[in-house]
Length: 288
Image (cartoon, rainbow, N blue to C red):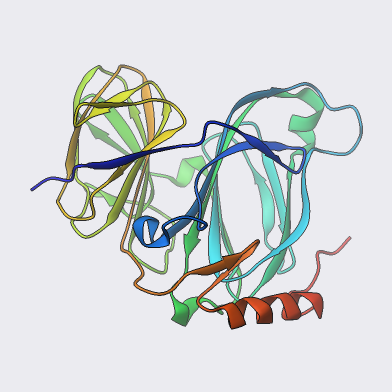
């Protein structure tokens, strides 16, 4: 049995995060967390053009905390610079990925890079939040900078897949994860049928970034997600030429999800503790 379409997820309106990221929240932990586990949130910064910034202050979002999960930022156009309270940081550009494990607690900031701010141009990115199991929610923070050159590219009939995490055929992604996860950046160059080998038992979602796919008689367009059944192995879809997809699969984490703002834990009490720890300075700060 192959996987089938459960629902099409969409966000008709975008909103600003800080002044540098105009995003659509295609799913979040405010909804059915069991249906999207181990994922928590996906903000799609769909294509936007920023004029050169002459203010001297890059656009973005200032210092803010996280605990209990990981953030995965994938850049398609533009550049993002990151700094955090545990020494992680750097600038990522087109094709690069930033994987930050907040774990026990981190304060970070994300801005357009200085070079990109000065010249402006197209900007497009995704930020995905990945849950941590209870046993790992208080691990020390970690930062993985994954450059485009480090991401293997697997070929299949009619397209390619950059393997950011997990496996695609014989290719293995460089990201280190706490639970089994696949993240593939798929580019379909020829119109026609596409067969993807998605694991049985994994939550599976296909994010359409450009082009269009058809699945079970339904059309899924840019800034929409096809959420598939957990049961079943693999999926077959029809794609237009020049279609770009982000394929997400992950082994569900069968634990309660309690989130509030930048913290995602297992109980309300743990959320209150996170606020107290942050307010008392236990997350540290970013050096000036």
